[in-house]
Image 1 (cartoon, rainbow, N blue to C red):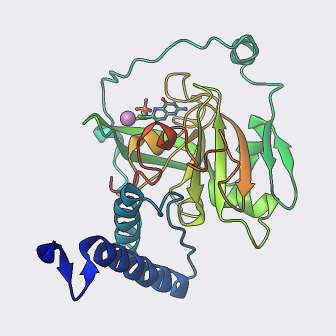
Image 2: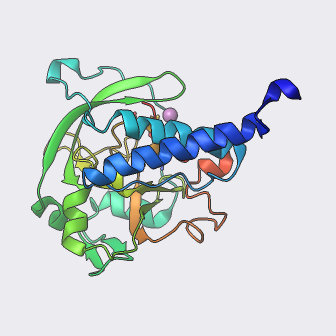
Length: 259
Ligand SMILES: Nc1nc2c(c(=O)[nH]1)N[C@H]1C(S)=C(S)[C@@H](COP(=O)(O)O)O[C@H]1N2
Ligand SMILES: [Mo]
């Protein structure tokens, strides 16, 4: 339709052009600040395009203000109304019983692959932060998280030059998800093993390890992490559909940007 075209360009082409331009702008700005930038994996589709705009836009507008607020103890949400299934996997139940003493976290796809105990993770730099987590269902909570900043763990194991994403596999629901290096190196992206120091993250909240993902909705805050893998692309990760996330393969956006 004539209304839908401007100088022979369809609205869809214009949106696509705008998205790519915005993404390129965000990429250039971030590159100038030494930060990496990846577009969501499904950028080729129309919904992927909308997601790409949100993701690129969030990065573009946040280049000078990337930290989320940290709250005082008095702000912690008192009532947690989140319900989750009890653990079913016998191996997991055994690890919970022994407080994960003989469990190791495999970190693969890196220059120096490692298997790390919770005690070894606790030897690495530690950060405690009280931050807000927003669920797309409208349920928000402010909670404490103590753990190793992911960037410190990645510095230890080393990333090859072609790595673009960090993948996580979960015990919680056999879910899997991935994040780009902008988020992986964000100072408030931590692998939390404790709530406050000395109080392990409960199963409900994501035992044994739980990711905090500032700037992203709650479903990107992966619980029950059992393996970490550095990835050059998302083609074969998870179910091999290229979505990069078990949530995305069920229709949510990979990015979850905007919180
Ligand atoms: N593995 C896994 N991680 C998960 C989920 C899940 O179902 N499986 N739920 C997510 C969603 S939708 C939200 S809102 C947060 C809830 O975190 P909380 O229970 O610590 O408040 O965890 C996220 N992490
Ligand atoms: Mo959620």
